[in-house]
Image 1 (cartoon, rainbow, N blue to C red):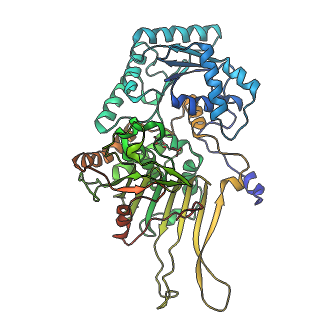
Image 2: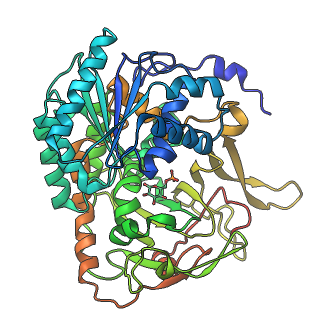
Length: 526
Ligand code: BG6
């Protein structure tokens, strides 16, 4: 293991984000949709992780709210099971879990029923009064998206939203994705949210922003002096962003069939990655400085024509195939998917950012389900050198440098550069210098949801999307959706499950004289 102790002992702490040991003020987390999949798989294990690490105050409490008629005991048992099953990378201490479960409660009710919301309000205020603390509340919307509008409206009408409150008792709302299904619905939802809350109370989640390696993009770019001078159209040839998943749609067929890859991944996670790679240095790490710069990138994206075909977005669906040695069925046979569906499980496109820094530099984006491996990587490909010295006739041209940021798995950074092979001949080969988080830092990166929940409890929205940011991302995506609507295709191009996508996406690169690449290549892939 490399000895990095000296380097780490001088580590600096940024003024943004909670102090590693800071515990938020006592508050209640109210989870709407508490009986659902997201609550069980992600939220309850994340809240427990924070509790076990001592990052929540002893008076913290959690109120699960959903339509299913369940009591406190049953909810606690279900939560304990979920924590045991879905906690990864840490040991669950049974005594701590018992103490945690005793802080959980459940309320049954509808998402559009004012009387139920008024009852929650009384309940929260009584509990806070008993414990001699202000009724600070963090609401988490983990319901089906149709319920987001009604829930925020009722939070406003019942007074639970405490619109504008900046100090205790505070009230904040975390809204899950999808935030709208197109530009118009995102605007409508923003309108409803703003009627009940002020922007500083609203935390629109994109869990990619909670990933350590995503946050590290800013550190790599702005805490080092050697990259920034090269980070522009003069030296960068192009940028590739790959978000590949080996999993299929699993139990989410009905949702996914309405969404497709453009809405599910491109509009949110990929746009965030584009912003972080392309943005200018913010004035400070304050939430609005960072978000202002991201919005500028989104506004500078060159509009994609609303046409059906490769000038818009390349779309495809996975067919049956083999993923990691297992036969899997095609998308059209997945449960909850229409047998004649034209929802894309793969999407690729070329985008340009029409500002000074990125003038003429293509950003190639691709995402897909049931691909050969699960990998998220950003590769910055630099311009080729003049071939006058080493590119003699008969020799292949010297490969340009690439800097790759591996977001997951095997998180790390790789620089690919040329070295001379020892020996009498001037033989040049590319070499990779790898930095892997797991090898350097002994502790595992915290779960994205843990970081995000803690930030929301501290009132820090830096890692959440602002209302105008969401709308700017939808503004860019909307013509793509319009183009897709015009496509009267009976069947989308197919790619075998376990491959790297359709040939149409390779052709997108080939016409530009380029090809898709993965620098930190997962084993067993081509
Ligand atoms: C979600 C999408 O936002 O992100 C899923 O809805 C996708 O379809 C998931 O599988 C990927 O997240 P991660 O953290 O597993 O890369």
